[in-house]
Image 1: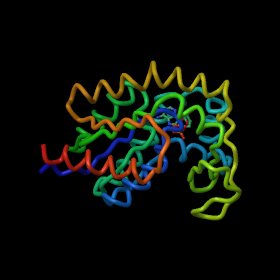
Image 2: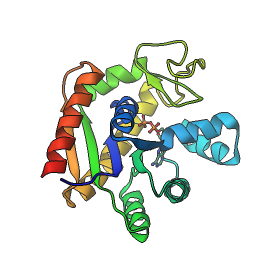
Image 3: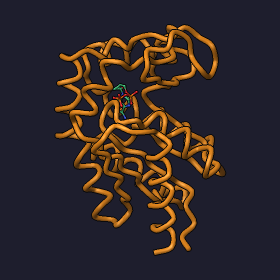
Length: 217
Ligand code: ADP
């Protein structure tokens, strides 16, 4: 039985990473870090980091690797003893190599990569209905006015429009799919294919089954 402590969750924009991140962190007692939610919180707080990140996020571009690598390295250093879940990071092969090197310096490694492979048609439909909480990062699919977790007024993300989405999808395919391949080469990827719209809980159950099979391998 493998011991799984460092999880990475990868999927396209609007693939349901936020929802499954909550499931994974609750079920496996992991501390989650969503780089997208953290950057949005920095923007909401008006910090220098937030202002820098906003320029890229509003243009539907990736925030530069150095900026994101720095945030994650600091967070990992502060959370050495926890089981952890990285959501939305690494998003480029360069980020993956930095993560591997940083973890290896601490005597650790990525233990498992959960890859949510959701069909493009589903993602496009979801993106149009998606809202996000500017405070805690929760995302919803049904146009909720207030955050089900913390009650803050939900917003439509400035990068959730068809033009920005097309750019983010292209970046996902060209820059993030190679990250999946990077970890496939290390034998660490469990893939969950979603081809029909259904209940998030069903996807969670499939993830749990895939993780169990991987841990027992
Ligand atoms: P999504 O998965 O829908 O793209 P996220 O909340 O994960 O949403 O990210 C939103 C935005 O934050 C990204 O489009 C990008 O600009 C920025 N971002 C988040 N994580 C990273 C990362 N690892 N590297 C670069 N930019 C990032």
